[in-house]
Length: 110
Image (cartoon, rainbow, N blue to C red; front, side, top):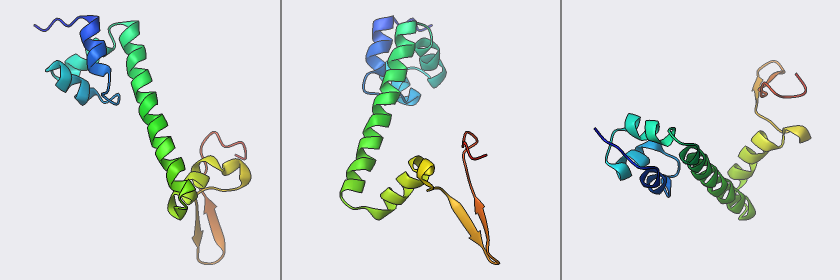
């Protein structure tokens, strides 16, 4: 039976992107075992969250960089997700003048 120490799990989480299969590969164990150890200690739980948030920040920075470069598709996608308070969002126009607007369930207009 595997018996990892907290420091080993923290080391495996670092640089994993918060992806459990990456943690498992670094620990040389199964996905389920890696998850169990990641959730075992408060420190490893927080490290996993921090790793996931770091990757989210990187993705957002990449998107912002593309928008600054003038990438229209990235700008449209960003507006559809983050610009709803300014009237942007996903919608579908159907013949006959009907328009269906997709909104998040937390949209204040609902």
